[in-house]
Length: 137
Image (cartoon, rainbow, N blue to C red; front, side):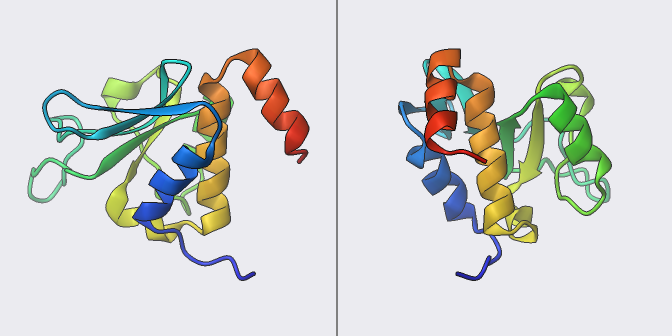
């Protein structure tokens, strides 16, 4: 199988493919929030003043938040080849941001790894250990 560019739909499919996932919807915009054990690991943000187009000032309406380990956050943000970013609002928060319009800059395998890592970052130790035992690296 060829590793194709990722698609926005893949974010949803990958998040739902992880075990023990529930989907809740944001109160205002009904944006999907993927959770494991009541903890969000991937969610689609509503437009906020901290994430905006520097040329027009228009708020991004396609920001996806993905949880990650702090060391993974630094690695993703330091690699200029990735479309991941952050804002001061997320300083100290174990997550990275990704615009939906830039998902295609990742391969499906890269996106899969990031979504799985997001799930692992929020899953209980028991659930994470069980999943890792079934999916050796």
